[in-house]
Image: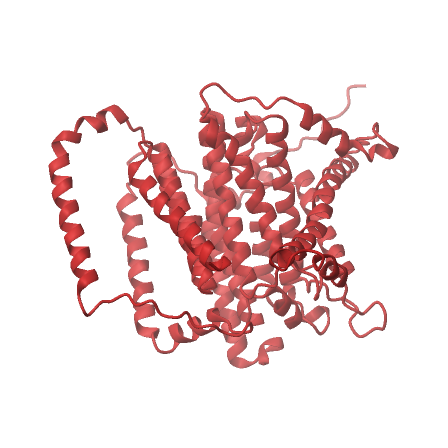
Length: 347
Length: 198
């Protein structure tokens, strides 16, 4: 496929060639991403429906399969309401910031050893930088709306994201230490050698911390105090309607899929097969990455149907007083692994 | 003009413009947002000279953490703009004098022989060169003592900031998390078996 893009880009003048080439690669990644966001909303409603002994959406199309498209069309045709006392410019910019940072992070996420839009050396740092920018969209939305509920939601969400970013960063440091690289391709390559070489086993506490922090970063249940339907209506996007709301929605689900992809790449061996060594099914391929992502996304939905919402002070306590010490201790333990040459750290 | 030069001027101009915005905007929230824009643009400039580690770190630390906290504080402040403008004529002369002094200082620095800004060629490195790795090696070998010292100073600053903001009020009702975590279902709910009436 990359060959084909190269050929297409050669039709254009020399200056535009890299732009066209990268653009095509980006389209091939982003279109399925947007489609999978749509399907994820459908799967979410179906799975939670199943867990709660309901049918879920079943009216539009076979088994309700076209429900997300009906929702998209509905949202597109709804009016975007500007609250009278809102700060209009920032109110409209906020959803774009959220969306751009959510999609921008995908630029360095590889789908297999050969396919990524940009193979950046410090790709892990790039993802961390872009996800830390995402909080601006939420804060600005909450502030520009000029409503108490929206502002409360934004404050909660921002505090939560800042708190969990630190634990997340420390968990990543553990991975970087083990793989000796910030590049996703090299991190996955360092995990090759069977399921017990993946980092989930040797960095188990970091894996758990990273996964839970990922849920908190995306403001998903049980960490969804930022939306808190029962207390502050919908948090930062309470006044958003139509396409502006759709952008927030899209960004949230794109971030969920991003967290799933990162967790699979960093801790679950990415595109490596769990049956390494066996012919045919042992070959690394994008299928394994997608399967792992699917499992993690299912966990996201499962948690939403299972756990009640955390209390705000408990969220803060978990982030600052439990996760950060755990990660610090495990980074020290990892140092000991290196020192005594235990497990895959003997290199 | 090469494409990179064009990008340099674009980001440079935006950087200067947003830095002006920081001091010129009336609304403090706008000022912080301009500051964020300035950070991002200077990060782009670093990216142009292939210092990707520093560029990304600038975004992670300054934009992702420091500026968010600024924004927090500024949004929660109840600022009366009219009141701020009242003192303008009183403070204007002091501000002007300070501005002139700083300007003269900058001029001296720029003109002195010790500190000169020479347009050096940026070194080009091969694609597999990682300045993250090089920086790490330097920091943890040649500069280990200054590095650790800086870390300790920061730690002290954290501890001091926390002790300054910790105020114990008497009679405050706080939840004891340990008690909450260790709670047993038997202490809260008693299940009583009752005979059915009929």
